[in-house]
Amino acid sequence: QFLTGELCDVLWKPGFVLTLSLSSSPLCLGPGSAAGCHRLSQVVKQRMQMYNSPYQRVTDCVRAVWRNEGAGAFYRSYTTQLTMNIPFQAIHFMTYEFLQEQLNPHRQYNPGSHVVSGACAGAVAAAATTPLDVCKTLLNTQESLALSSNISGHITGMANAFRTVYQVGGVTAYFRGVQARVIYQMPSTAIAWSVYEFFKYILTKRQEERRAGK
Image 1 (cartoon, rainbow, N blue to C red):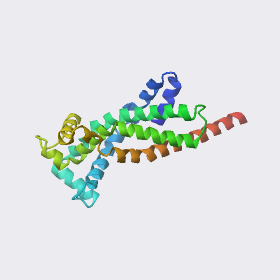
Image 2 (tube, helix red, strand yellow):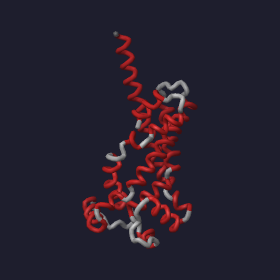
Image 3 (cartoon, helix red, strand yellow):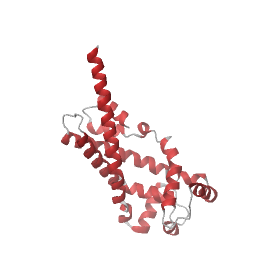
Image 4 (cartoon, helix red, strand yellow):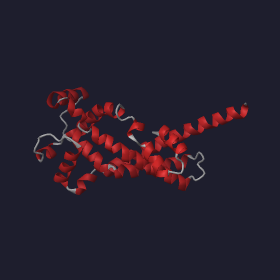
């Protein structure tokens, strides 16, 4: 998404929101392949992290899910993940660019501003998309309390997940775990933006030196 963001920034510099929205499109992120491969690991990870999880090993979890629920269980949250990627990346990029305009208006390499902007951008995007993450987690884990309130026995689809979350815990249930999600995302996005800006600075500097040497 960084590459696409840079390309859009060059092509549509005046269109701030349009530029950042385009940079977060699913075609730019490649979710068809990346998110698809990521689904299996997410389902296994979240089921093993559940309280009183019956699984001791990754292979045990994979076999149990495959045997009891079929291969489709690994992709119940696929559309929710794709739907979450778009607003998350749009908010993420817009917040980062906005903070850079405030903290680093001349757009020079400034590690401190990149860390702060990246961390804050991740925090805002994570908090705003927590309801989608809650629904994604429910689809992945098929938590027993939620299943008992669901007539079909299995929770499938984003709309069904949203209804079930509301039935179980009301509006506040959509924001359970928001603090943990924000704390997780802040260092992740801070590091990502810092590394990206560092290599961008190094590569740009080398390119300028080569041009000057000719």
